[in-house]
Image 1 (cartoon, rainbow, N blue to C red):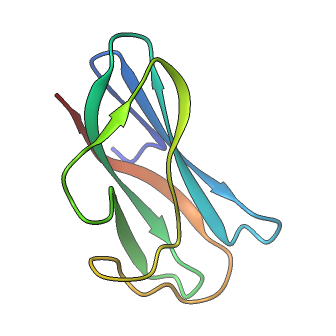
Image 2: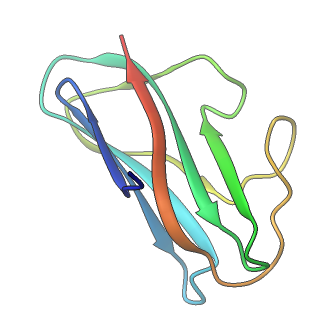
Length: 101
């Protein structure tokens, strides 16, 4: 089931549409426990109605999630490992995958 949030242990990830033209998105991590190493993916419906999945960190691996709410990434991203992002309003954010260790 598609959802803009996903909880892994004590870490809750959210994927939110941002920007004045709904042309960006941000992924946040809220950690209620000890520091973790995590990764997450957010699927977005792009301006041309195609569906793209963006991975964080972009180069694979994990990044540190400390206690509290913090930015985990934002997009659309460009560069190696990221899908092309056509212009236009984004919609239907889905925190499609998340893991922590």
